[in-house]
Amino acid sequence: MIDIHCHILPGIDDGAKSVEDSLSMARAAAKEGIHKIIATPHLNNQYDNRKELIIAKVRELNQALQDARIDVSILPGQEPRIYGEILEDIEKDEIQTLNDSQYIFIEFPSNHVPRYTEKLLFDLQVKGMTPIIVHPERNSELIERPEVLYSLVEKGALTQVTASSLGGYFGKKIKNFSIQLVEANLTHFIASDAHNIINRSFKMEEAFNLIESKFGNDYVYLFQENAELLIARKNVMKEIPVPIKKKKKFLIF
View 1 (tube, helix red, strand yellow):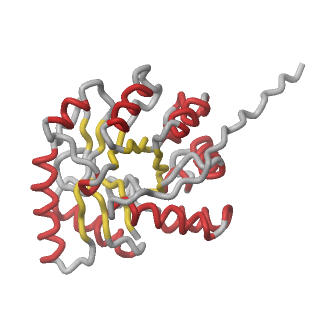
View 2 (view 1 turned 135 degrees about the vertical axis):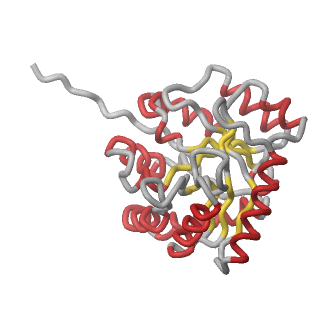
C-alpha cells in the first residue's frame, strides 16, 4: 500500500519531531501494509519547507530506515497552502510535486476557499500540472457548499480524503461528508495525513475496511491503484463526479 500524504520527515513541521518519531511512524505504517510513503511537509506561513530541503531530508530518512531495517521507503512531496505566487515558485523550482510527478498538492484554509482558487487551479493545469485538493472534507465552506468542490473537480482538479476522517476521528459531520465525497466520485485518493502515532496516526487499514463494507472492493482497488499510478507519474482513474444534494432542513413549529 502507498500513502501519498504524511508528515513523517523529522523536525521540520508539526509532524515527526525527531528521527526516532519518524522511525516509529514508519513501523506503524508497515504494520498496516504501507511500504511507500510520500513525505509532504507543510509550506505555509508557519513552515517554509522548500524543495531542496525536502529532498535532503528524504535522503537522510531513507538512510535511517535502511539502517533500522524498516521496510518502508520515503518519496518526496510537499503540502503547499494555496497562495497567489505558487506559479512563480514553481518556476523557481522551489515547489516539490508528488514524487516529481505532474501531481501537486494544494491545501485550502480550514474555513473558506479563496476567491482566486478556480483561476489558480486552471493556470496549474495549463502548465501541465494536476492539482490535488487535500482533505476537502475538513473545509467548512465545502461542507456547507459542496457545489464549490464539484465545480473544481469537474474542471479537472482531483481531491484526497483523509483516512481518519472516514474513521470518524474528526467528528461525525466530517465522517458523513467524507462518505458523501466517495459516493459522489468527488475524491480520488485516500491517504493518512499522519503526523504521529498517538493522535494523528495512519488509520488507512480502517478506512479501506469501511470503504469495502459500504461501497465494495472496486472502490478499494480504485483508490489503491490511483496511488500506484500517481507515483508512476501516470494518469489516474476518475469516475464521473455528481453533485452532492444538500438535505433540506425542515422547521417544526
